[in-house]
Image 1 (spheres, rainbow, N blue to C red):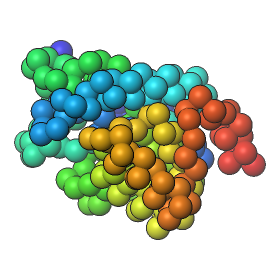
Image 2 (tube, helix red, strand yellow; image 1 turned 90 degrees about the horizontal axis):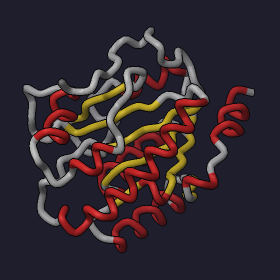
Image 3 (tube, rainbow, N blue to C red; image 1 turned 180 degrees about the vertical axis):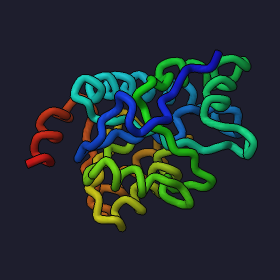
Length: 204
């Protein structure tokens, strides 16, 4: 059985939150060229995201999985999760750290940005979210594109540097630097994020 994921916006998930955690393309089989070299870094990334996600859950800060469909146009998020956990793929140790909970939201995307032809805009409007914490991979592709679209929507962007990963450390560092300088993102280590303070300050 694939993990159950809440698809009801009025379930146990928060109805509004000024702050949201986005997990981008971390439900990933890592079965692509060059992925073997980033596997260890992706596993470390997943552990950091999992700790951040647990803190967010305690504070009722919503988590939104923003995930590629990886060309499986007949698939859905449940099947993508099941594929990564059950088919002996390279990315299984990453996904095992990040199995969605019933209260999590999810958005499937067809291209790099989480906003392009998806319902993410509507969901963030529904949640009254003004600040997004971007995690996942790859730092220099889908995280970067999503950060750019968030910036153009006047959302505040936070990128925990240890909660993202790219094919190479150099690409990771360059993308973080670009998000910080061009997109005015706050780039910090996840351990330094005070989620409770962030949530309070954005409610006031």
